[in-house]
Length: 309
Image (cartoon, rainbow, N blue to C red; front, side, top):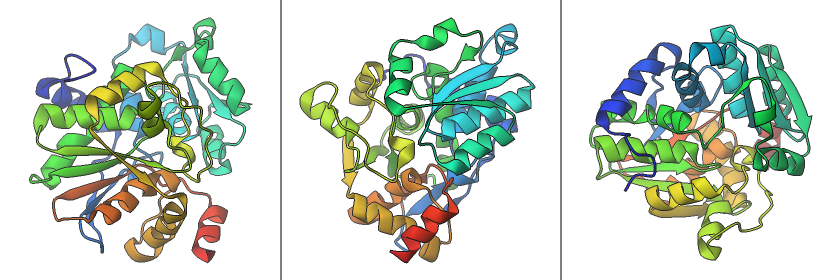
């Protein structure tokens, strides 16, 4: 079953060719624990988000894009939107949580975009009321846009090119756009691959949502700020259709895993980026297992804190 019709093998390859000139075919590296890490932290803005935002912008009418781009984000989607807008030479404005990490906020401003800060509750209200419809720019939804999700599917041909016999992929889940893209991509190109969704027990949004069959009323208390998206009914349906297995990583384990990745694997991962690796270790990595390191935008002070622990 697919929650977004028409995402077949031809569509995945088409979108992959569309975004290829603007992104990197990121490395798939072996880890000391066994299995492999897909280093999306090496994308131009430090996370996978550029895949979806380039796809969305290129699939829009040029005249609409010329009005400028707009999104809402805890950080990585904001960076991606700002980067894409700069590459396309159009204006950009992003709504960001006032608790967004300084590294991400400064990066958005350095890329030339306007960052509008607001409390998390107000930002969620802005999304729930579709306030962007009153703004002049073209809005790109950071995780629910079909074009964004299809753009994220471009990660799948890369994984298959580097590890053709992959059989299980762990994916961190915030709003759900990345894992939906990954699941759709594998459904189109290698349906036998098992796609596993991972969250922290500091914000078990989707696992709890499926238990209560609706909004679970949980508040983020996690270093994985990239997974702090709100409940969305459309994504609830898509995730229910596309993801068959979920793993919850204890927050204490996640904190140790960020430090372990820096010392043992020699890569920097933000909290959300370390989730899949933590889950892969717990499940027992095999030579055909991949964990997606979704982002590496981690403040130096936070890394020092976690290493000290």
